[in-house]
Image (cartoon, rainbow, N blue to C red):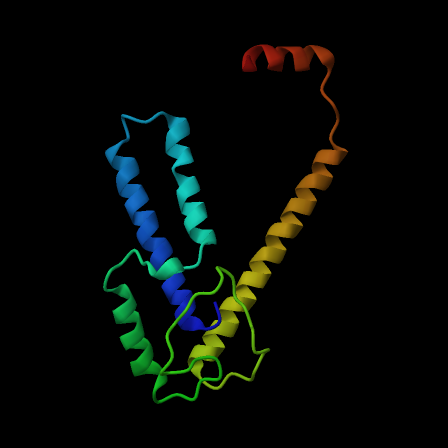
Length: 157
């Protein structure tokens, strides 16, 4: 994602996939085991990792045209440093990228994209720190007594 419009394209594709999966999960609620119901979300995780419009395909047939029309209407009067108003919106990766460095924001859409990218970095940092704290807490924990461990293994078997 190199600008706000690629973020919107990725979000639209992911949202449509999530809605379809929710509908399918609801439809097959009594036919699938709970393990399969959780396994269905692996499809959404895969969709989140693949860029929207990969191999020229989209989930929403008219969504690409609507997104390009909205982008053209918004970007024409602005002097964006990240978006070419006459180019095509492409999602290169599911994470924010800056192939041309970090130019000064020339429009509100540039500033919103920088805000989004900062949010992604802060959220990734928060998850990493939470993981590090959990790992440290687990290392400080004590091993259970052998009889408690045997009881847990008996219940889990």
